[in-house]
Image (cartoon, rainbow, N blue to C red):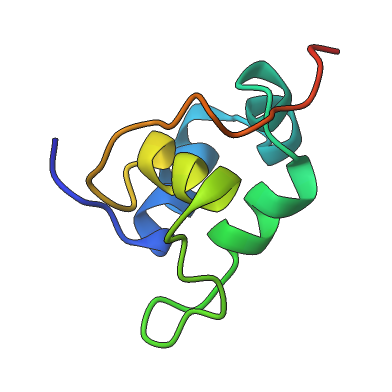
Length: 78
């Protein structure tokens, strides 16, 4: 799977009519953290997504290559 930029992820969500909150809840991630990652700057991101839930979100969105870590505690399904 090719690595996407944050703007490509935003365009995909718009094209498919997905909400960030709905996607986050479906995948049991923090909606606020998903928004922070997607709306971050591609050139100089504040969130590096190196470990934990940020890493898992970035991998799931296709922003980086890697494996989902199941050791990270996730939110209870809503």
